[in-house]
Length: 439
Image 1 (cartoon, rainbow, N blue to C red):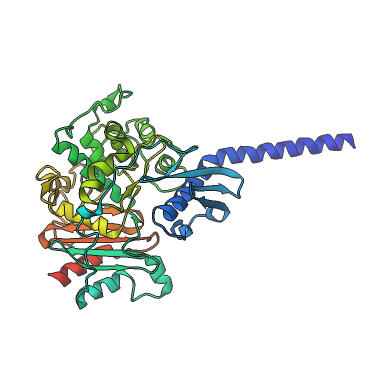
Image 2: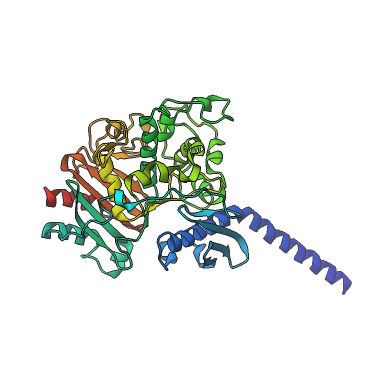
């Protein structure tokens, strides 16, 4: 009997060791999932003011085993209530931050919506052609499942500087902030432009990180803005890839990206990299208010009272991905750039900044039309990415179908927000339809 007990103890010990080994092997992947869910629950609840955070979770095998709780301080998620716990902390003015403890962030700069004429503009009554374009954008021709997959949640249209159309899905209003995902990269372009306008930086500044004593010392602000730094990166949105590790596992996102080795010489190839954008903000933000830099530099002057850019645990704004705003405020950003950085009569960006920023980078790339934080319709060879749109169209684009299009020749701005992980968002067709309807 003693022998069998010893054998059983050994077998159980081996099994326990195997289970623990598998868990620790998979732990980074699990933490990525719990980090995503915790941040999502915190931000959807406290920043967007909604009570359905599960509606913004992507389809993933891990989702059914996640357990999330939300309270006044933020949200936390674990696997089955026991494993790989992650917490997102709420901070006034800065949204939600994944961290082991409450991050120490500065007092947020107040933002007065009075500086933004679109915040209180009267809701328009669109003409029939515009109404038809909005119907298509919201999937009026689809069944319930099709409309759910399309997921359009808000559209705002500005023409000649006036609000001419807007519509929202059930559960969303003109006051509901929505996550722009990578549209934050276009905001980063504007933040950089503000510093260039004052002569604080040059796009060709290098020696950006003190630990870069090798070839990385030659990486410039321009390289990071145009994603031609040459740093190794993988933007695949999957569990425990560099992009998701940066967003959900690394307390100092900029430091993590800066630790990556060079894969190509700076300036020779373009590789889409949220890491480049966060690294850029980790260079520029600390001496300019840290997490408060976007509020002070951009949101306050434009009166973007709903806009929140969340920060990492080091206090750096997550400039790649985490900007929330109402569709009206997103559209206001579009009008600001359409007017070449002039707002309420003040020139806030260098003259011609946008013309240069929306010129597609002419280097080896797999990113059709990627410019300096914006996307350009006209490619370096003169062809158009979207022939149905005017050549001078440019846009900010974000995960799950976020879209902010600007067409200078039409004096048109189109903001489309939604949750579209599994379908065509119809944003390009919406923009083309609006060009025709408002011509």
